[in-house]
Length: 83
Image 1 (tube, rainbow, N blue to C red):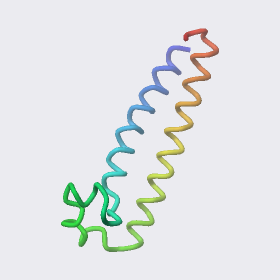
Image 2 (spheres, rainbow, N blue to C red):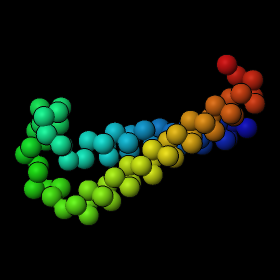
Image 3 (tube, rainbow, N blue to C red):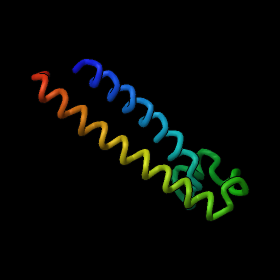
């Protein structure tokens, strides 16, 4: 049981870090925090709508894995009697 908890925790940590990177890679829509931190400078990098759409899909996929790993981790802790 400990192997599953450790594996799920590692997946959760990797997905969390990947989510931060993916969200920061998104093109700013204007007027938000992304413009304050230089989001308008890199507008030529994310100009393709195909790239933005694929980035959206990847972000949603990682988010689903992140959410599922939280649910699995909660069920593992519940079945083990921790917390």
